[in-house]
Each structure stands twice: as structure tokens, then as C-alpha cells.
Length: 85
Image (tube, rainbow, N blue to C red; front, side):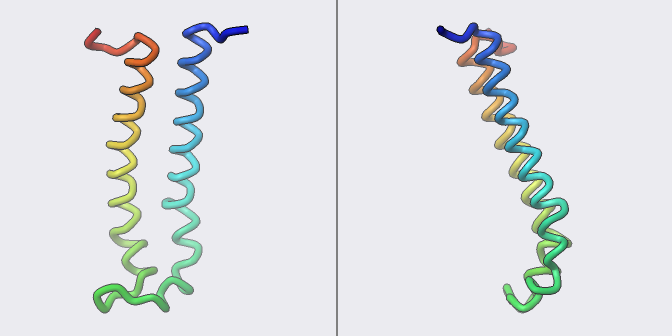
């Protein structure tokens, strides 16, 4: 039995949303829970825990935003619901 276009679209979109939420929890919470052990690793003289808490998570969120937009656009085009079609 073949999935309808709507079911395929929702399936791919939900997988992308779940992936994004897992990454958000990782960079937003889990990394910060391990700041003390990460401080033993130095990058350019700064402790990795400090870097991840102050800049790394923000950079990850911006990269995630652009990645999500690109992947969702691919899903939209594949399923025929892109805005510019």
C-alpha cells in the first residue's frame, strides 16, 4: 500500500521536527549540564565548557535554523507544496 502525498509530507516533516528538537535539547541543555568536565578541554586558551555555554550553542542554533529551512524546502518541493511552485 502506497502512502498518500499528505502522509508522506507529514511523515518527513515530523521526522525533521523531531530531529531538530533533539538537537535543540542537546545544544540547549545537555551541553550545559557538562560544562565542568568540558572545561578541562582548552580551545585557543578558553575552556570548552565556557565556549559552548557562551558562543557554541548560539552558533549551533543559527546553523540549525538554516539547515532546517533548507531541508523543509526540499520536503516541500518533493511533495509539491513549495510556495513558489
